[in-house]
Length: 157
Length: 337
Image 1 (cartoon, rainbow over the protein chains, first blue to last red):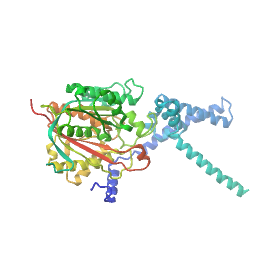
Image 2: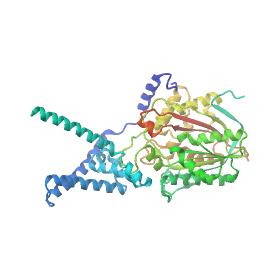
Image 3: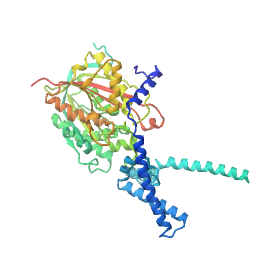
């Protein structure tokens, strides 16, 4: 293999194939099972808190939903702060990243990390580095969905 | 007269008069942990930031190396140092206290070899009496610059590597006898075969290692059999495998004498996947493990070829490929006492 990137593009393709062969794949099936297990447990906890809100705490459905989110975010943030959530994440992957607790983790972890650079320009500026893009995409998607819905309603009468 | 463009035989050998490695707790638990001159209890070292802790580690390594060489700061002509952080802050900030004429270098994880190479050339060329070579890396400072916050719960791909928390320093001088000595250096070229995944640094650096090794053996006339060890810096398991394949295409076999510091420093340590990486990886293994062994006459000649992935967080986001570099030095045992 020639080592010049510019002389022969085939080198890059051949090397890419070699790298693919040499790099171990993630154990996808095992990771899916772990994600299912941990994600499921987190959702069960959420469901339990929701039931608790509607039952003994006598909230209506809308308030109970908000209450559940708040409690789950609190749990995720706390576990991040005491250094447990990253360990769960290393094992569970998407199982702990996708639920709302993972959202809390993605906000609190940069907040802790950049605290040394100051409360405003450190924590304040970096707190959204991971969650920010997700929020931007979410808001944009809801805007598009809203416009489509508006057009549908006008046309459909 | 020198005819080669990469390999230089030193006009007079340059001796490694003192060396030291300071490592973090995780590295201390690894199979090479007992070799390091100092293993820290935690990775914060009672400092306010990980960056400050990294500076302290480099300072300690420098102090220990100078003490072993019995050379004082005032006698040293050059301090050659670098690290992984933006604006090589660890080296620059440490140099505030050393009071040695300073040259900051950046070669990513190849920095130890780069400093040894340049220090040897300077001294061998007749400039200066002593040169101090130092480098360091820290998992927590590198991670926040190149990847994710520490507390972020994510899964790392199995071919990713773990940045070593360690510092290494060596003191070079022209007046020596029995100490290990640098005899040849090989200046590497930047090689890029189009790898863009910043998690697969072994793959990004393997072509550079292959290029430097092939160039070295072609130009110098040495054969792999002439060395007890051919040491690469931090290719990890994936990169080492790729290096073997790339060299095989050119009929160069390293065999059992190939030793990758990244693979060995974390052998059997959980969660480090393909092995260690970072400037401190090859620096601590060379200065903590190999040079003392050579001083004990267990090793006669070694080739130290450290590799660096020359990426930045900016180029990663801009989807640029990752250039690699590999610098090499030949170290031989000194004269018998």
